[in-house]
Length: 478
Image 1: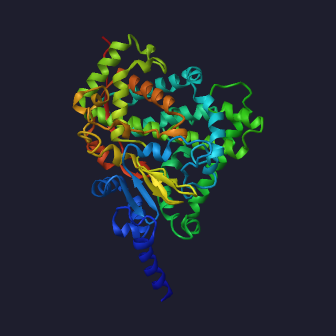
Image 2: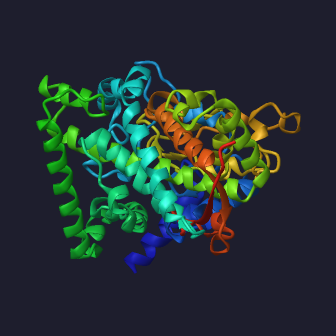
Image 3: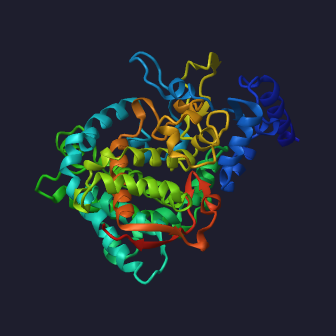
């Protein structure tokens, strides 16, 4: 009887008395966390969120205490810069575990400001020039290995090739040595574990919202997973310790935080957590974007031909293609922007939380502790903001008058404000370098096994990508 009364009173409160009761959305979702959690774990949450925004409008109540925002100005209103005495919409603490809260991505305001200042040196223009040889080495090694793998017309599976490349680069720039993926043509166990548990991460972040969620996660986590995570963390610590032991100064992403640790400006826990975070953030998302762009080029041959023409007329030899010179490729930048719009590597929301005194968003007061989210994929695919949103048309970013009505302010794949992606410029440069070498060397044709590849992707916070088979035909140098 008590359980029935609790459920009934919760339903009445959430529908008629809750501070968010006037926000539109499906009534069942307003009553309980369950519908959203099931959608989050379904693999198709991005499509459902687009459907909800098209039905209910720019702001939708998706749980008793969570709002989804789907209009351009929401980026600045939720995530934009604040004055020092003005509360920010901080990261939702329930979305991050204890180690994540030590990272640049999951930290509170004070820690974020300190870590951002420390880590920014490794992502500066000067550092990019110093790091160029590392990027060049692995991009060239990728091409060399692909020439051998595709010899005789064999199709190659590109999601693994891009992952091998970006993780080797990240390993070198963070741990001081690569994972050996391109040498061994296989995922390192540390890397493999990340992909094996993407779906588990989605389940955990869904369950955490319920009462006793953390206890439940601990209870349902298999012992084998717990052992894998322990081994994963031990490997990370061992690699960080090896990086500490390197005496020679390296122009990598860890140099500044290692110096900060020596000067007691960063803790051991922060160094370890950020090393892990930088590896994943600097690898998985880049490889995902390269895979999505490759598929879109293979299925849009005229765009591929135009991109090849730009590369061929910009460079006389392949040796001229480097981390700096690729910034001259304007059409390639438009190709990546359009690919990021259609297939953003972080398609779902990274939730924020309204401060203790509440906040104002879109001219409406939002009560304290409300969870706030912006889903990229639904925004980028909403015909309200982009003409022909399912079409791959890089020209929309180059002043084509057909797309003058596009609300391009919607497009923020690297977020905005003080917590925008610290590696944005480096990611663009890395992706341009790798793709420029790919298109310089190969014509790219989709293998029939990978038709409708985009539609087969499942979303569990990050994409769970199907295999992407393409045929690479070596180009003749004219």
